[in-house]
Image 1 (cartoon, helix red, strand yellow):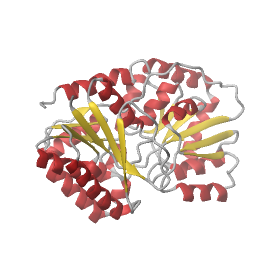
Image 2 (cartoon, rainbow, N blue to C red):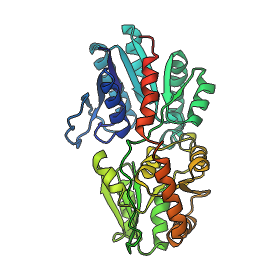
Image 3 (cartoon, one colour):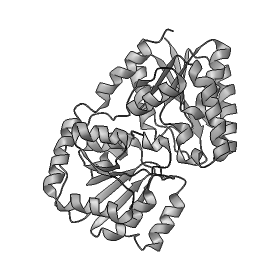
Image 4 (cartoon, rainbow, N blue to C red):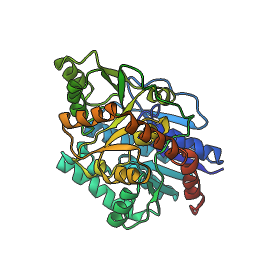
Length: 365
C-alpha cells in the first residue's frame, strides 16, 4: 500500500479541502497521513479515516513561525517513511521537496493559492522575494502539481514551465432545501478567515445601511479583534455576530440558515484576483445566492450558471445597494436559488474526486 503524507500549516480541524482529499485517497486504497501544526488553543482532532499528526511550535505566527515549522517539518519528514509527499502551498514545499530528493521519493505540489501574491506577503517585499526565490528554485523541478482553478493553472504553467492539473475545491453534495424567505431578519453569511484583504471592514460598514439584516462571521483570524472593535464603534453589535471557528460538519448546517452568502475580496494581490474560493461552492451547494467580486473565476461561473451577484467595486454604500436589490426582488432571488440547485448537481465532490484519483493514478510511482 502506497503511503502519502500531506503537509499544511494549519491545525487540521477546519481544513475542509484536505479532509475531503485525504478521505478520497484513503478510500481509493492509499495509506494517508495529514500533518499540520498544533496551536496553543487547538481543539481535539476528530476521528477520521486517515491518520493525523500535529507538530507543536514555540512561535505562533510571522517569519519565526514559518522558519521553525519548516525546520520541524523537515526533520519529521526525514525520519518518517513515505512514498509520496504532497506539499500544500509554498509554505510547506521546501521540507517536502528536499526530503523527497534525499530519500528518492515523489513530491507533489498542491497550490491552494498564489502564495507569493497574497496580501500578507505582497506588502512585505523582502519576504515576498524570499518566497518567490524558493518557488523559482523548486516548482520548475517538479513533475506533478495541481491547483484550484483554471486561471491559476494557466498562470503557474506560464511562470514555472510545468503542467498544473485543476482540482476545484468543491463540497460534497447535500440535500436541496428552500430558504425561508418570509423571515423578517435576513442573514448575510461570511465563512472563512477574518484576515486582511477579505473586504470585511467594508462589509461591516455596509451594515449601517441594511436594517433588518444580520451579518454572521464564521471564522477567526488576524483581524478578529479589530473587526469586533469596529462593530462596537459603529454600534452594530446587535446585528453583527462573531461565531468563531465552526467545524466543517456544523458549518454546512449553518450555511443553510443564511439568506445571502458573501465573498468580497480586495484586489490587492493576484492570489485573490485569480482565486476560486471554496465558500463560493459551499453557498451554491446550500442553495443560497451569493455576492462576489467580479474577478475572472467568479465571472466564468456566473456566465455558465448564473448563481451570483457580482460587484465591480468594494465600497460600503455600493455593496449595501447590491444586497438591498437582492432583498427587494424576490423573483431575482428565486431565479438565482433555482440556478444554485441546478449547478449543485455538477459542482460537487463526487464529480471532482474523479479528477483527483486520476491524477494520483497517473503518477509513475
